[in-house]
Amino acid sequence: MQEVITLTVFIPFAVFYMNQPFKWDFLWAGLCLLGAVYFMFRT
Image (cartoon, rainbow, N blue to C red; front, side):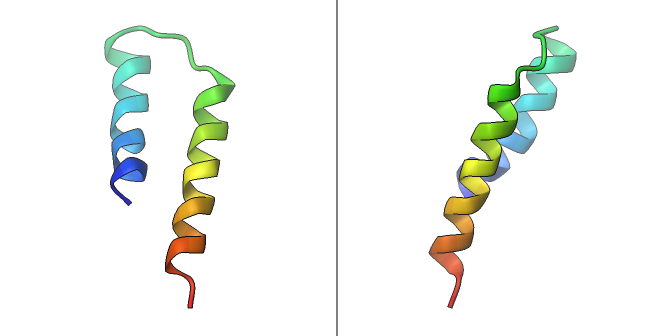
């Protein structure tokens, strides 16, 4: 959970404040982490 929250804060910070270009790696990493959270908390 903590990593998902960190990515949702860090990606906009990196793109808008630090002027880093958006990379598709950000999206794929986020989807992998969301999948990991899903499998950890499903019942």
